[in-house]
Length: 482
Image (spheres, rainbow, N blue to C red):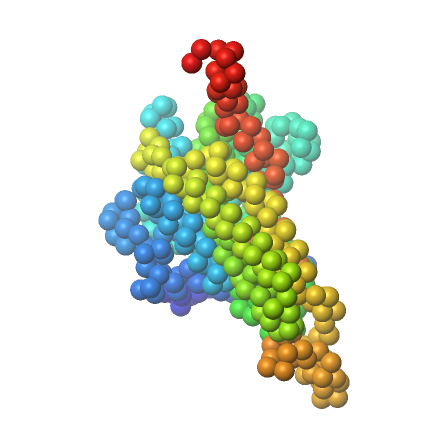
């Protein structure tokens, strides 16, 4: 497995084509806006080397029996599914940000089971290709970006009916040695912290959309791939040189629009090419795994936010107020409910035909549906406890100014046992988690990540088996015999 230093060095060797604020970025790894997100990924390498975290962070590979980072693993049982959620909570607690390796891990497990079924049913060798690719990922402890979401254009039109056919990523040429693809993937988490991109279709395709039913893997620095960095609220605070105003001093997350401009993919790295009948299963399984993930990562970040709110109450001198205690308890109850959903859908997992374990899809969708709501309430309660100072504070430069700094020290001091800077730092952390750069990976992503709330509601409706529930009621009411 890679050390943190080896991970960082490996990223420096990648020729990313990146644009940020209208300028091409040459040094991606050390850019002040980008580096915090890379630090978050690096934490997954750091903890894997920590003996105290080994049970969660590492596992024995099902492919060659060697010890690997769990983020590159195929789930082999319910314990693996549960430990995945526990690992994600741990990393959320350590970074208070998105640590970005979950999408690739979820993609591995979805692609593995679907390619097995394609190979079994159609006689293609997609599964063998994918397993060879995954073995390469495991042996080199690579960070892989899972790429599913297309720009989608006019939502009322199918991919093949779009006025611009590139609004869904598609195959534009098939060659004896591979395929050529064109299009884009949007909202790509951790794109500039990844060694490889694992592409999947974004929805269930029909026969007329067969060119869009494509899955493949390419190195992140491949010719024809361009990254356009996404802005976040309060992001330029990272470029001011201080640490107080950013809230989260070391960690962060990022998303990119990733452009594929006639990118060549050798057949050995193609895992679906036109088999539209299997695109829906791949989307459904990936979405299920990723919705399970939110029962871990968002809970870990929620732990930090609850801790920050408790500190703010203490620093404000309000920790003993009964209403503050009650709000903290409510935050904990909501957060642990999310965790319970993540553990529940894991505990009800089962083996697919490939041997890779899948979560209970209904419970995974219930988990994510709760995630679209509870973090918003947790954030609201944290803002309530923190008070208005969270959004009216002067800047770090004002605090350290030789003339006016003393006024801030004097008038923003609360508890005599706590310095003004300590109070400001915890306020800025709450601001970061609820309104700033971390809100992208906590609050707003809780709504739209792994699919919109309506996407989960559709899946819940499909999987809840209302007909069976009607029969139960009919038997109990004496309308039918058991």
